[in-house]
Amino acid sequence: MNRPQTHEYPAWGETYIKLVDGDIMEILERQAAEFSDFINNLVEKADYAYAPGKWTIKELIGHIIDTERILVYRLTCFARAEQHALPGFEEDDYVANAHFSDRSLLSFSNEFGLLRQANLYLFKSLGEEELNRSGTASERQITVRALLFVIAGHIIHHTQIIKERYL
Image 1 (cartoon, helix red, strand yellow):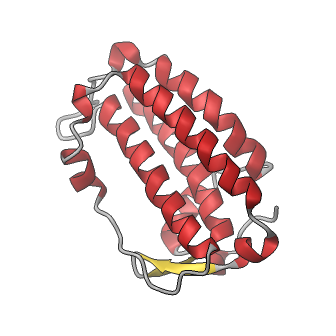
Image 2 (spheres, one colour):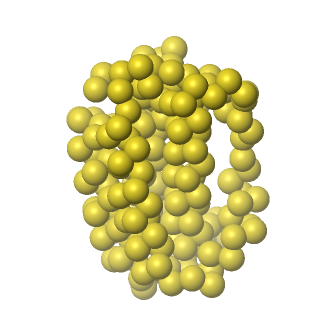
């Protein structure tokens, strides 16, 4: 699959898309197991935040899972030619209202792995016509293809943040 061109996504998408190097489907598949394993190795730091006011590891992982769900919902809508604009979301509000601290890190690991496995069925079913479709979310246009790259890049981005700031 070709990389999305800059006209296929808003400027914020570049943060994630630029991190994706290689076959997007292979990367998305590998992340299902690799990111779950990565989460499992963070148990001792599960409630750690690297600075006051920053998310804990649990909150960050919860954010990643919430964002995957939201991006895949957008991807599904646009692949199915949804014409209505979709709303944005305020990530800090989602985290504040999620009670992530009440959960075990193992539950997040299991949830992410299952969520990604389920999403892969959808991703693999997309044809060129669906990949080229676009829609509006958060008042910005984005293609289905770009969303796949954003989904993969979001994991890469936050994995780097965890390694740099939490470990």
